[in-house]
Image (cartoon, rainbow over all chains, first blue to last red; front, side, top):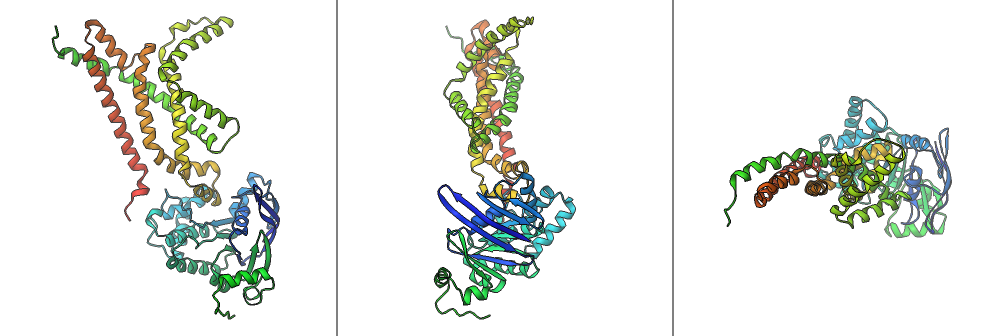
Length: 251
Length: 237
C-alpha cells in the first residue's frame, strides 16, 4: 500500500537518510527502532512532506510521487491519506479537544459539520475522553493531550497513521494510557508506522520491526526475528543497551 | 498681570478640541486599515525569508524607526506636491496640487510609519507560535492559508494585541503632529482657538484631556477584545 524507494535527506552537510526503502501493507503495524539520530523521525516527516526529501519516490496505491519535487496537489492528496501523531502532541492550542479532532474533517476534507462532530465525538470516546470534549489543551494532562492527538488522527480515517515517538514526551506513569489506546486501534486493523522507544509495544503489537542506524535500514523482520535472533551486530548491540540484562522474551 | 485660568474659554475650547476627534480617528483608522494587512504580509516575508521582500522590509523598518515622524511629515508634505505638480504639468492635467486636502498626506505618512511598527509587532508575535502548530494543521489536510487563518493567526493575535494597542495609541498621539501640515485635528483646532486671546494654557489642558480620554477608551476596547481572544489560555480546569 505504501512503498518508499531510496529516500535521501541531508541537513546541511549532515546526511540523515542514506537511501531508505520501506514497504507497508494494509493492516501492518510496523515499528521503527534505532538510536537517536538514526533518521527515524526524519523518515516519517519526509513521508508526510513536513520535511522535503532530497530524493526518493513514494508509491501510495496507484499514486506515484517524487518526494523531492511533488506538486502541491500530490502533497495534499498524500496528506489526505495519512495522519500524523506528533511527539509533543501539537494540539491546536486555540481549539477545544473536539474542535481539534473536527478541524481536519470540516476544513481539510469538507465533511459537513454535524457529521464531523459525530465522528469527532466517537473518536474521543474511543480514546477514553468522552468527558473532555470541551476542554482546551491547556486543561489536559500530557497523556490526555496525546490521546486527543491520536483521536485527531483516527477521526480522519486515513490509510495509515504515522506515529513519531508518541510517548517520548510523557511522564512515565502516563505512557501506559497512550500505549493502550494505540494497541486498541492496532487491533482494529489500522495500518500504523510507529517510531518508538517502547520495546514492549514493538514486541506485543508490531507485526514487523525495522531497525535503523546511521540513516539506513540495518535489519528488519518479525518481532521474534529482531528481538530473539538478531543477525546484525549493530542490532544486537542496540538491543543489549535498551533491554534489561535478565529480560527473557517469550513468543 | 495674571488673571488665572479662563474657565469659560477652557470649557468652550474643550468642545472645539473635541470636534477634531473625527479627523484624528479617521486618520488613525485609515492608517491601521492599510498598516495591519501590509505589516502582517511584510512580517511573513521576514519570517519566511522571502528573497528581496525580506530585505526590503528590513531596510524599510530601520528607515522609519530611525527618523522622527515630524521629519517624515515634512518630507512627504514638501516633496509629494512637487512630484505631483511635475507629473500633472507633463500630462496637462489641470489640478492645483496645493488645494489637496492635507488629510491625504496624513494617510500616507501615518500608514507608512505604522506599517513599519506593525511589521515588528507581527514578526515577534508569529515567532511565538510553535512551528508544530503549522505542521499539525498541514498534517490534517489544511492548506497553508487555512492553517494560518484558523490556527496560527488566532494564537499570534493574542500575543500581538497588547503591542497593537500600544501602536494604535501611539498613532493617535502622533496624529497631533498633523497640525504641522494644517490637518484639522484636535491639536490644531484648539491651538487656533487659543490664538485669538493667547489662552494657550487652557487650550493645552483641553488637548491633554481629549487625548487622555480618547486613548483610555481605545485601551479599554483593546482590553475587552484581548480578554475574549485569550479565552482558551485562562479557562479554569
